[in-house]
Amino acid sequence: MAFNKYPIGFFDSGVGGTSIWKEVISLLPNEDTIYLSDSKNAPYGEKSKAKILELCIKNTNFLLNKNCKLIVVACNTATTNAIDFLRANYKIPFIGIEPAIKPAALTTKTNTIGILATKGTLNSSLFEKTSSNYRANIQIEEIIGKGLVELIEGGKLHSNEMKTLLEFYLKPLLKKNIDSLVLGCTHYPYLIPQIREIVGHKINIIDSGEAVARQTKAILTKFDLLQQNTQKANHTLYINKEKEVLEQLVADLKYNVKIVEKDF
Image (cartoon, rainbow, N blue to C red; front, side, top):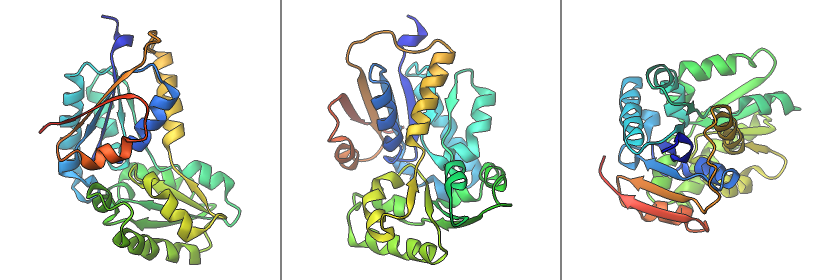
């Protein structure tokens, strides 16, 4: 069996990485995919680097056992803490997710941008390396979105608790005169409607989804791994907790999607 017929693998600390997965399957509709939602261990952002690495290795091995030809690490915290190790120790390509600081830095008019991310992402050496490239010219205001992932994973996307937390995190950023808000967690794109209500329409909200999809296509093309079959693709999503929240997030998709509850 040719490698290009194998599926693309994805993993995240939970259901949030489906925001990335949706962008990829939209751009590459013929590609089969396998998505791994490690919701039992969400969020990764509060865990030690050693624990994050351990979980990333476990997730990678799961996807390799499913014959994935490429793995998208659909989690900012996992990327910033483990992507170098994964690329050095496995032979398949990995696509990582980093906060989209560059487009925000290049387009800011107030020279101040905000980043909403997890503790694990903001404290990582990779994030520090990336952000340091721009700190000489712009002000980067960082906010740890503690509790947001847990609410999304708990099915409380549109709850009063979510609104209260978002206002608590975002209103101080507005006082800093930011003109761009970078979403540094793959769960956060699901919050864009609520964020927009708080920050208004003058703030540019930036996430990494489209860029990751384009990079995935580019890497598949580079290594001659693009699916040649034009039949409708199949998508299997594994989750190690109850699947109701995951079902809600993908209910709008008109694809062949199968959701499996499985302990791993």
